[in-house]
Length: 234
Image (tube, rainbow, N blue to C red; front, side, top):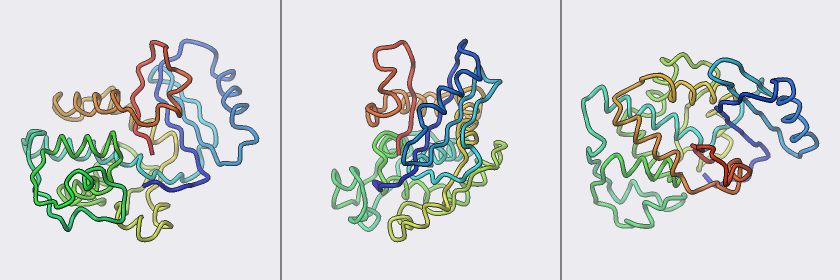
């Protein structure tokens, strides 16, 4: 969803040898001081230590929840023994016209079958709202996704409404929320635990690390460095 919110949601999962945690926390606090926004930051250091700033709030995830959904889709396919090439038939009715959707722009008449891998690319890299809701319908809705993420040990988040509901009533976006640390913990879990077969993991990792949107945001200061940047922009 392309909406203007006075909330900035930064999720980091990185390995840093120095500076010391207190110094890094102070730099983060200094960088956000005076900004006309509520900013929450969570950093996981070397898989062990954490730094948080303004973590005790429920930040609306907006399209960041499409990362959560991608993990749930991979789990669903893994359970069913289905490959990422599994097709989903898409009707014209599913391609809503009043929302952001490169998928609809490319296939305005619908009545096509696309592999799940393609739909995940639309959601993870282009934040396609129609593709997102099609995938929710396929795996059992937002409630099913919420339950799966909770099964990974996450608690401080909620996924209740899909993109269509948020578009019809913007206030419902606050029902899809997370603390910064819980979002960072989910990313850390994806990176370091075997949640499903390697083929699904590699696909999601590649989608995140080859994403071209949002390069002028969090990733910009790291341009030209050796950092590997994987992200799901809002």
